[in-house]
Image 1 (tube, rainbow, N blue to C red):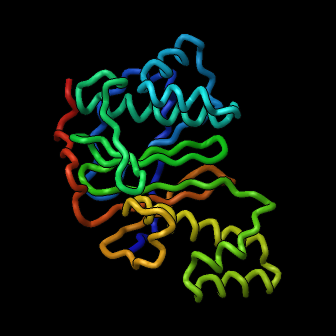
Image 2 (spheres, one colour; image 1 turned 120 degrees about the vertical axis):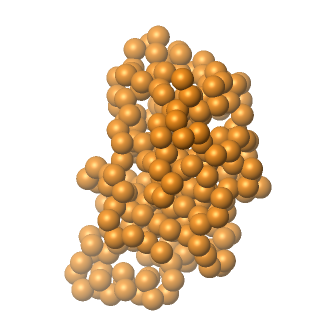
Length: 239
């Protein structure tokens, strides 16, 4: 099921919220936070964010060669640890983050979460108790969407995009594919599956489009059932 109204994002500036309080999470739609990798960070703050990572995450950060990749990983993972640390009353570096059977990270005792990034945008989605998945994609003029659409989208949906492109609406077709891809990827991530889950029709899944800046498309999904082993968030943030 997919509601019509897109969910808003809540901008988060790391320079202003290095020690965030745990925000109240809604019981229905997930909370979606947005970070911009171009936000200027003082060197002392950058070092503090790096220090909030686990040793394996710092090694992964150092192994990334592209500056954009380093910035996205540092900000996204550090922001996640800051938030989870606020809920669990733990130092960010001590927050337990584990990988599930298909590689999806989760936090034992904490709220379900998911992270996605593309271009300059980083999205963090969190829910009180239900598995959540989020995907954001930056539009590209050189996107060769047709072979991917034929492989991953339902035939009727792929054919509709092909007809749109054949009718001279190439840009609209490419944008339609990007919207469909974000919804598909968000659903797969909520279910904790990779593309191997394409042949397994989802059940009990709600998907929202997400309001993001021009040039991006995004979607977020939650499952109907609670996440196994997920801790329920307290009604009031810890002091």
